[in-house]
Image 1 (cartoon, helix red, strand yellow):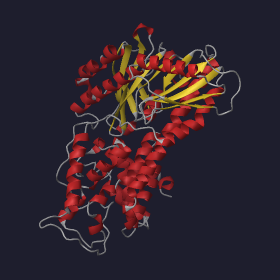
Image 2 (image 1 turned 180 degrees about the horizontal axis):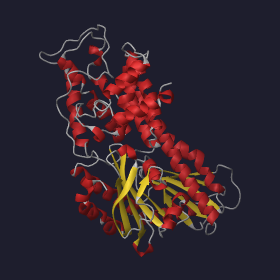
Image 3 (image 1 turned 45 degrees about the vertical axis):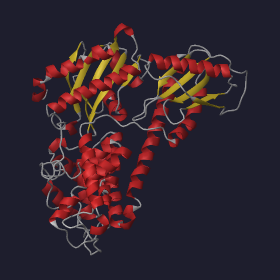
Image 4 (image 1 turned 135 degrees about the vertical axis):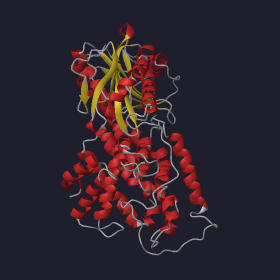
Length: 540
């Protein structure tokens, strides 16, 4: 165990006991990084109660539970050995049949997780337990931050910044008309107002680890419409319902092959209302749309057989429920088919969200950067290199997506900082350079409401240095999100080597030498070596 954790083990265990009080889990365990190098991706059992570690004292990113937490990024539960084949062997080996797991996610990385087993009274875990687990995870992160562990110390934005920008973001050289400024000012009033507002916004957001929630978009609903009729292929299924509670117009899709009578719809809504009450959610108010994707046949459905509902767990989207009514108690085959459909729905909506975020990121570059083709082309090249680099270091898919989006928008803060006035200036004053150093703060404030906190943090930190001499907060080492450290290396490589860059390109061996020179000071040394070893696949 890392030495610093030993001194606060009692504090961590006290938070872990919340699993008894708020979740009623009969046993629980806390896993945290096994070394100070978070790129190591090993998690060690730090403290627990009534937990049988078996062969799970140390787990890696390849572990099925860790992998699922890294992808879903939110707590989830499994009730029964047959509910999730990936976790069934682990549960059986440890003598459990129910699990509730909560990731410790902060600043774009998985810091650790809490593993809870077997709710008291042999009860299944339910949606309220997920919310309670998320609160316990937040409390655990607060303890780690309070003790300055794993780069989670409270951060403050500092006023000072380097006198010159990083070589990875040189200012183009060629004259352009200069707009008049108020006496004694470096920036126009609009630019200065943007800086002040961005600093206030990001200062308030420093320790907010909660994921932002989003409203279901039409593209999400289209994905559901394509996949959802497959529910009728499940043995003995009478009808299926997908309900989006609390979203715009509260849509509900009902699919069936038999005519659905009003009485059957009323019984479905009564079932959902009771299910929502059991899970401590608001009353139901839906707008059902009945769809017959394969035509109508058979007698009208006036009553429903055994009906089951389950939450559709999608990152940053709440209130999604899948319900299926069966002619009789579903067989094991029907239950497996239902679980498979649930996973397909979750993956489809997640995929739709990724496409939507990419579109938003592209829109943030336009139309402003159409005026600056070198800058727009630079960001797109950086995104390609950064995405390949993130895959080469084997980051989870969700973090690869964060890196890609952050790379696309890492310089959008320039759009509000009089970039048009200063673009192609032959030289800039020290004050103007200091002003340009505000662009990570302004960019992060722009993208957070649209692309989420993980992307915003990667943008905010992409000019920090591992030696603590970067900006805006002089973070150092592992405190800097891995997405930012990857982005910084990709940004520098493209700026040095691309023929589309706004500076004279250098040969690849010269660029590699410069990266090595900056390893351990400007750049993460281990990541530089990994980048150069994988150069043929990252930047062919």
